Image (cartoon, rainbow, N blue to C red; front, top):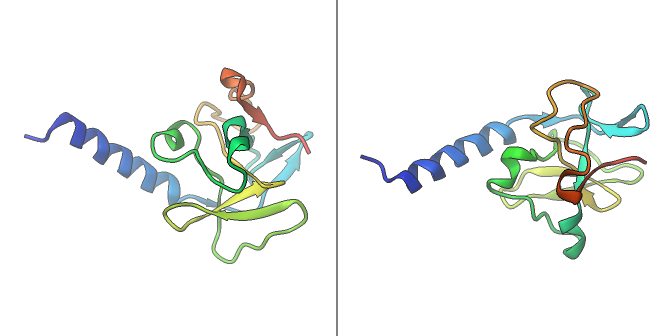
Length: 125
């Protein structure tokens, strides 16, 4: 029988792999906010302001806040850059801040993550 902690770690690893397998085209502006190519809202996390140039949302954090990963061959442009995650995948960043989606947003135009705990915010260029 598997130990409950090991089972949880395995589940988290599988969910992370599923999230990481979905790479997105470059971000765009839709109705005054940054979105992915499907119109899903993008967010930044204030906690990452304490570590400029580093991605702090890893592990279980990415279940609720999936990173906006870049497709192979993506190139930085304007205020958009690419940051390397611990697993080697590339994540989009805006003005040096990593971009995320909210797992609570179910359709384009949703922005349920805005203001979450006062530290997650929509990106409004």
